[in-house]
Image (cartoon, rainbow, N blue to C red; front, side, top):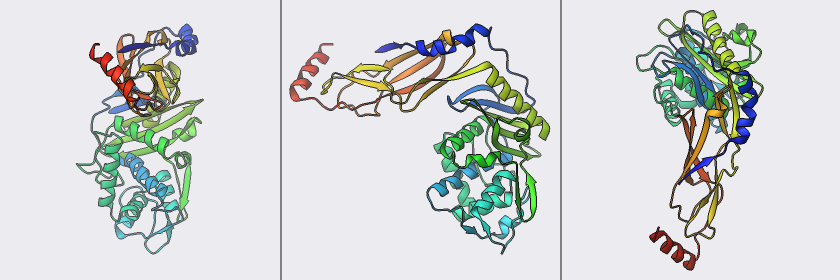
Length: 377
């Protein structure tokens, strides 16, 4: 059964934008090997170029290192005030460093700051060893999380992002990873907005230049190797909206910041993101057979957001295709259909529709009567 879902309130919300927009201009030219502009709330990609091309992620790798470390902190297998030994492997790390030393006590909290703000490879390795015993074992945890998060073009062999033929990711996967970190570990996300950190009497600035030039940017991570070029994942929140920009392979540190700023400004200026439905809000009442009730309310397991070019709201259409016959028992949270969203006749996305209440099996009389009716349908 297919049901047309009315989007009246959504269309009215965007009608003001339609009055001022004559169409969305083309995205700006971006000087980078690959890039993505991603809406945090709707999980939609607004702009992309070579989004699935595998490249060296350089120190953007540390987003996953942080994600796994934050998991360990949440599970209480690691504590911020815990002192961590510094191995020779960590101490001798190449590239950017926090300058930790063997036999000098360092806490998990200091290492986390060093990894995020200073991009310390030594801090990253020390954290990896604290969580998993070795960097190799930690990389296995990183890949396990990558698979769970749906990062299908990503593989990690280390915690730092130092070059390795089997260490790769994509702009699209990095956008998803950044969103997952913000969503799943919001208590640690403010660390990404800190502009400097001092350890071992050495003060080092955050390399994300947008933290100084755009007050709406509050993260996230820079990266650079000779092969990767200059990379930046940045996130900006303006009002209730948050956008994530991923720029890989820019020509310089200043270029990665400038190109990221272009993407963020474009997304905020020419797109709207609104909440279409709330979690648990009924969007349809579906027929149920052989149950104590004849119908069940259906909705979504999470708030449903959509991002659209300004002025395109009237071209949005939603249809619900329900699973029929829907036979009791029906459990709350059980998938009962799919909502298909199209924009100007072109598929935009598909979202599972679930029962938001339980319908138990009816008595023998009700079941028998419905069985007979189904037989003759």
